[in-house]
Length: 174
Image (cartoon, rainbow, N blue to C red; front, side, top):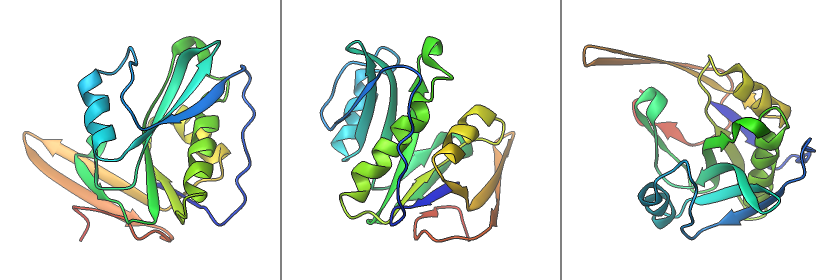
C-alpha cells in the first residue's frame, strides 16, 4: 500500500504522448470493462479518470472514497472519509511507457486534494515493477506490505506496517 500526503505539493507528470484527462461520475463505454462493472462502481460514488488521445480513451483509473474490494489480496479497504483510494488502472498497450499512468495518478490526487481529502492511497502487487515505478514517480511512499496466501481455500494475511499516516484500514488487519 502506498500513500501520498495531499497537503504536499503535487507535481504534475508530463506525458510522452498528448492526452487530455477528464473525470467522470456517470457511466460510459470502455472497451476493456463491462458496463455493469463501471455502473456499480459509479453508483457507490467512485470516480473514473480517463486519458484520451485524439478523443479516444487510452487509459483509465478509478478512485473511491468508500469501502472498496482489493481482489489481488482478497480484502476490503475501509476508506476513511477524508482519504481516497486509487485503483484498477489500465493503459492501452501501445501507450504504455509514456507516463500516462502517473499523469492519471497526479490528476486524481489533485482532484481530491481540491475536495478536502488529506491522503491518496494506491495498491500494487510487488511483482508489478512498472506500476510501482509509476506510483513512486508521483511521490507516493510505501506504508504497508501485505502478504496474502490462498492454499486450497485456506487464506492467510500478514501485514507489515512501516510508517502509517492514513486512517483507512484493510478489513483483515488486526
